[in-house]
Length: 468
Image 1 (cartoon, helix red, strand yellow):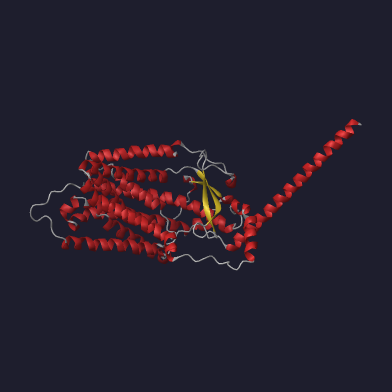
Image 2 (cartoon, rainbow, N blue to C red; image 1 turned 135 degrees about the vertical axis):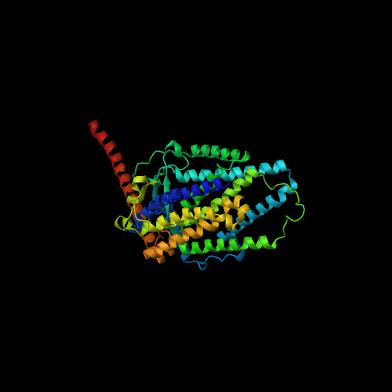
């Protein structure tokens, strides 16, 4: 168990390094589109549907001028609650909690052990398959073109926002429409990035993990923890929150857990007194071992997310970025970036963070037998207890390095830059520009009709002259 724990923890460190590399490549693509949008705010056209509905909207405006009831009726309070995003999230979390309670307390009472084992095995298989598939998509993304476009905001229909349109080759589901013509050659999709190929590989890996777990081996189950680290650190961006907020939240969670777990063990009755009651296990051991690896990944992914965010922070504040800001020409860029296009820059905070990340693993395995006791260290705590070491030690190393370099405040206040907000003045300029383009096209169409009409008139005259 101890050798498995060391292997799993070091594998998660490798996953954090891969996630940092993948996230910086994705971030440079986003920054390229952002810089183009800020430098050319009126270069990206409005959606085509806006031009088609211009006359209809104008008629609605003219008809509403003489109307006295111009204000929209106020929605009822219950309607506003139902339409809000928070209500949807609350319902989803409630259903998830209800399903978990039903699986833990309801399923054992109404089903046999055979059916219960199959339910948990299917749940574990589906969960592992989703994690592995997302990880492969993160590591092996399909080559494409990211094009800057403007769409209507989903929450406020009267506003517009920038979006990144992903254009692939030979994909019928996301074919290249006339609205998204591009001047760049669309890259071919290698077979190893094809979604069907990744699905087959994910099924094979999931089958191998569950099969090895069924026969008592947990070595392949370490891939579950690895996938969770790569997905979380490689795909989570701090757009609306700062590193300071994340640190307070995560350290608060770890502190509450460190205090609550011993208190619960102290106040709960000791079930070991007397003859222990024999109960059927909640789930088969191979399924529980897989879900235990999610806890391991949780403990290792928290510092990995901070490492990836710090990596992006140091790129934004490096001389490499200041001297050569990436810009997507004409709002188009090939993605993902090749290895040659990823710039080199100094990253002392990230480097010290990785050293602290590895040191936390070593320090845990040296001292955990004294902290958790010999039995607890040998049991599953040898895998899951890393969360009480990795996050504080890694954070402390980055905190001290940022203080030493004099950019502690900037590091704590860092938020990932994203596509900018679309200024209403620029929307009006784009709308007037689209109207002018529409008028020019209409005049051109009229000219073409006149020329064709004149040609039709000349043809009979020319035939009459040929007779004489």
